[in-house]
Image (cartoon, rainbow, N blue to C red; front, top):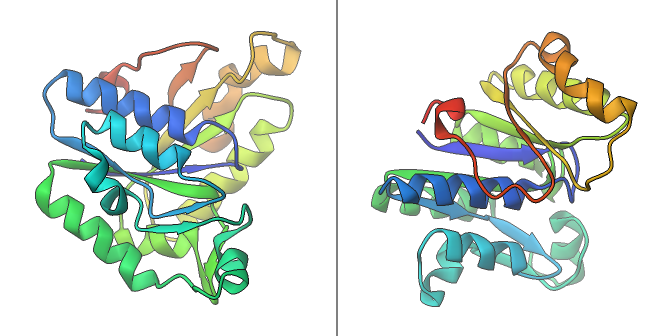
Length: 210
């Protein structure tokens, strides 16, 4: 089963989670690849997905078809660089990979409502792809609100939220970080698929139904 991987914000660990999932899948000889439809600022995330997918550099444009040098939302970058995003091309890129591989993990850009083009957001792309959605969230004070809003927005689109991955960005813990894990499922109504501690380099596929 393919997934769309979104986040509660930028910098919460979407690429890390996607790469860990790819490593686990490929470790079990599953034909899984990553797809980063749009990247802004650099292609580091796309390069990590390419490596985790076991693909050579010639496939970079297939994994990341749209790249902007300006580190802003793709909608704004498209205007600044006079190269607006074509939503149909993003969907076509996914379908091309899905035709060649068993599983495609689609990593969004930033959060759920990041604008890609006039009248078209990450949430629209996810809706067009009609994949179950995994939400990645950085464990910190405020994450319960951020996750609840994101899950509700996903479900309002008629999409399935497969669950949440709570990601530790640092070693230090406080009361909020310690307690978030225990109440997240009650607040959102969706599974906590994984709680990734700082420095963890593996994921259990059974937790993701894979």
